[in-house]
Length: 148
Image 1 (cartoon, one colour):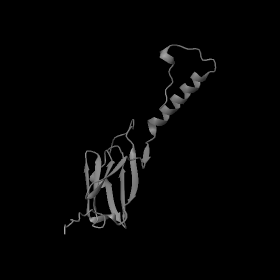
Image 2 (cartoon, helix red, strand yellow; image 1 turned 90 degrees about the horizontal axis):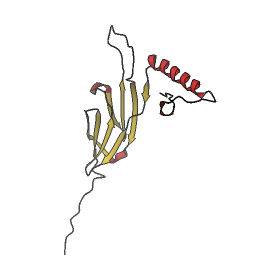
Image 3 (spheres, one colour; image 1 turned 90 degrees about the vertical axis):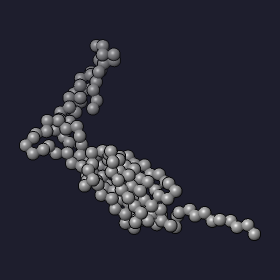
Image 4 (cartoon, helix red, strand yellow; image 1 turned 45 degrees about the horizontal axis):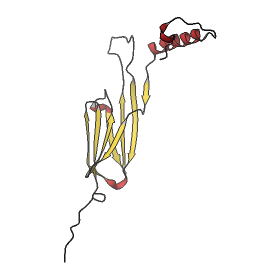
């Protein structure tokens, strides 16, 4: 939200009349925010790292329950989707809403580098951690050198 204030909160001369315009916008936004719920689509910070035997994907998903998160691995593509609704309990009326609903779906292509049987998912403290075990094709293997 934008709020107009004079420099150092001192009265100033507004030769062009912009102060009234800014105050009007501020009032307009205050009216809108009172009644409209916000919805976020796809704005979920993610991080992908690689370890020796697996890839690790972390997503920030605060306020989501286990039942709201869906993780699927199909044809080399990992898809994570979730939805959080924000509703007032039965018999209550919402007076102000600052929490927003959330719905997202993100897909990551790993091809044949991941073994689906070695994939795990854990939700803890608002962070979803998905561990994707590497397939035998891409794991490094040390080959001993013989001296003859």
